[in-house]
Image: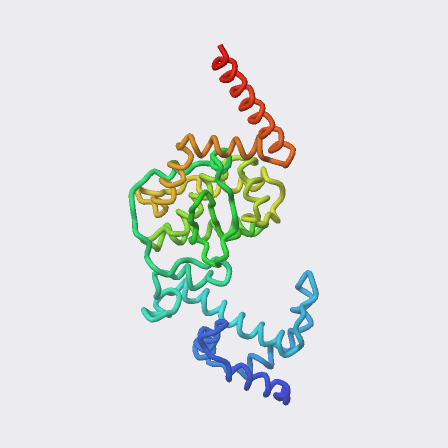
Length: 303
């Protein structure tokens, strides 16, 4: 079959784009390794277009050239990725994924952005992090952090900010694979400690509901009980060691919960200052007590 003008234009378009983006570097390696050409790949994949589109549950909103380009680039990338995963010698030390100890960042940065810098390691039991319910009782409020970095969790002025977490049916398998990779290949267990910290926060459906209502968790998995079960089971039979990256955060949260004044303020806000009528009732009661004291003092002075 001869190459048509549309295929020629598509080949030129793929070649013109930067090889470091969208797996094109891996595609180039795959082409060289298989002794084929980009023109041949485009021609063959073009014949698969309709069959490939029928494999999707929904209509793919791409025109013909965009769809074929996606199949060629992503397909070449995946084939090369699988080859290098089974035959590490094919990649070499300069491999952008397998030659990098932080492969987890390279592969998942579009879905799970991680901190590129090395975090300071400390020693602390992870279980010291309070549950969300305990934090809420102590007056801590929860807000989504305006950042794409999952590990950018901070606590200040009674507000715990956590980047938004999207949970659906595919999340568990994705998280387990990332954790397994860290266990086998990474000295830094950043993602594992992040998940374990969330597991400390979310130990019951009530904890999960607090995060869902605050917008920290976008739940496409089911109900709050499903979310709590997810975080309670995801780290079972996983070795943590003695190191934990969220030492300061955990200590600050625990100290806040252990301060009686914070709990009293939370009780006042929740039980007595929840609405204007409650505030009015409290003020009226205080005024009545004050007037009673004044009357008592005046009576004593009149004696």
